[in-house]
Image (tube, rainbow, N blue to C red; front, top):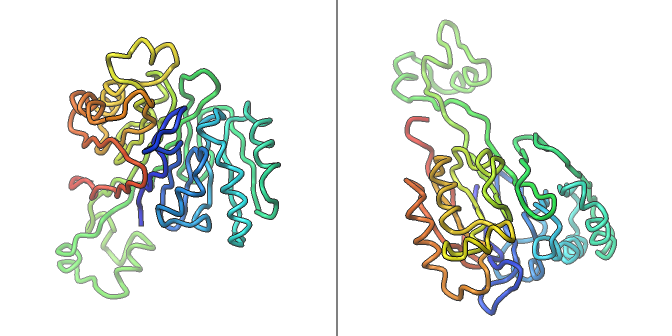
Length: 296
């Protein structure tokens, strides 16, 4: 199962309709919780997801609207009896803030702190890139390894069926038949999370070829001067990021409270997003991953 559960979509100031940030990515039995702001624990109840599903917590940076929900989530894990290890990823420069937040939560979780300070892999399939914000900020990218998809007709022509199919996949060859002879390339699915940044190379690297990109859209294009002042993206810039990177699905979020209606932001992003499907997220929305590209 691969699905993004949106727990909150506000930026610095929550509104009556929008909670602070919070995004739970369910990915093949893992649960990656990104940027839990205030109220995330309660939003998880509304969304019908459990703290027991969380295996990693990923903070882009330590501004409050992206991390002040951490103590509540950790405390709920204790109450729910979470026994598996939980890895907490965050910029090393935010060490003092993270340790303070962890200190006020209920103890008892096997919490493993994993600070980072440069681009690269931080866990299997999970990478980070620096973004351009007022404090150290990193975006995340989760990628499934490329593989191969078996073609039924080719298997039949080669006389391979039953347990022999598994042997072929495991060993890469069965007699004279190679796995490449009866399959086509399958491109691994890719997820990217770009939050609190002005346009930068890191954002483009994270978004490159993503099947699902979550991107901040704090300001409208008319407020581009404010976006540059506070180092955020406008809706049009988020759309341009998706378009240039060949993104398939773009989810906009992190909206300023100055916009009670965000359909205009969605339109601004769509005009520059090329072929990407664009959606302005609401709290408690769920987004599945698109079917794999036909060409692999």
